Length: 183
Image 1 (cartoon, rainbow, N blue to C red):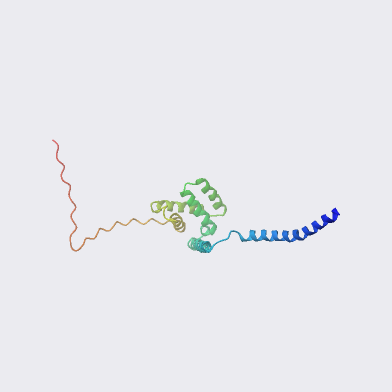
Image 2: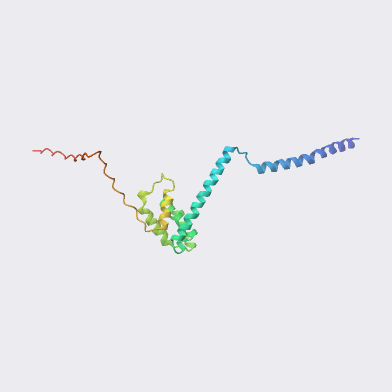
């Protein structure tokens, strides 16, 4: 009798175990695929971020195409442009160990070392014009120096004299009073 009772319990459990196991596997797979739920505001931000990333990628592609068009020889190859600009940036930031490791890769690709030298020399001429607070100021200057290492900084234009109202003449500069003579 005891055996029949146990067989009856297991028969009932068998009817629940198989569907329960299938349900647990299905739910686990659904949770794994769905990830965290997003609200509409987050999906809008992710679409804007994706558009910004696509715009940034297009800008980079355009820079490589510009370099290939402007520079004859291996210095215009995309790998040479990317590694060379990276070396110049690392040297500017005083990370010489990493710059030398990148320079080894640059040489291994057959890129001309003299172009890195000329681009860094160009960058040092523009140091007063580089503003770390302005986004991409350094990257834009490095790219410009990579394209044209012989570029010269523009001389700062003298500020124009202040215009006076009407036909009034500007006041003459005051002359200093003579110093008293000591006896």
